[in-house]
Image (cartoon, rainbow, N blue to C red; front, side, top):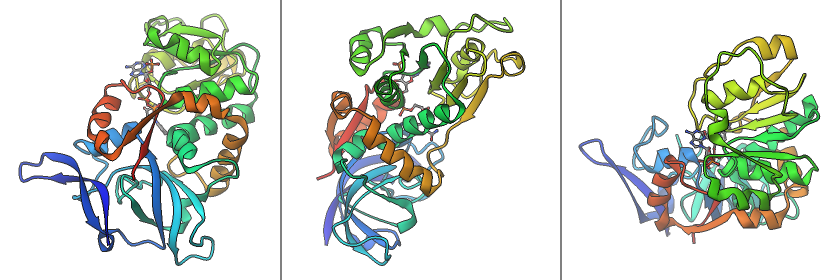
Length: 328
Ligand code: NDP
């Protein structure tokens, strides 16, 4: 039984190349559930895995795709039966085992989440790891209490930022969206942002211990110099959910002062190893609190053969919103 997949191969010089190929079902990795994949998506990590690997991929040939949604075809696990709609994100699928850029995937049942009522596989992939992470960040901010003042979203025109903007606006928060792409202002306002902040305003490294209190919460996809500045601008007792490092892995210019003088919280968000119960809670909140018309406005459709180019684009920060890959 043959099916299509994006296969990344490594040649004798150690260089990788990605192309759509026919592969056999018996090439799939071991697992207890086989899924007929309908849709996948593109994340930063996928860009790495479609390309040289970024240290994430261990063996070649490799099928990338850290997310997928589809229908259970066969299952050796009581929790799933043929016909069930499922979604997968994380667990290093698409990195150290074959992922969702194929018409079939085989995984452990523990890695799957039943698709919540009201969400189609296509919508689930418009959400993907990026959207799940945005929701986990919003839930973490809520658990700590969102303070007065706008909620800041950095890297707003990217995947996580777009979904975070739409969810926070739907929940009734004033959202300030930070972007380095001023031409995306209308798009961000369309998602519900009430204020657009230019990236440059927040990237100068200062040695000031604190700045004026502005933000009631923050979903930060950027880190780097921006997180160093934002921490100093948080309201007393407010929290920053740190989800990414699009602007660098070091928090530049950060001082201890926001933490010890204003009780600011820095909340780390990981979507990959997130426990099952919280995943289910987050997917249910997505079905409830993410406006589907806004989600649709973020979507850029794609096919398996578009992936090599999209992988390069996302590594350069040039993808807007969410890519939905129809693998069929
Ligand atoms: P995207 O590439 O879609 O978005 C990142 C956005 O960050 C860009 O669109 C851009 O937004 C902004 N940006 C890019 N480069 C810079 C820079 N040098 N300085 C400041 N801003 C920059 O990625 P995702 O939204 O999918 O992911 C965002 C980050 O979150 C990545 O680092 C990713 O690895 C991480 N991540 C972490 C997860 C977790 O579990 N914690 C899960 C998913 C992602 P704009 O053009 O609007 O300025």
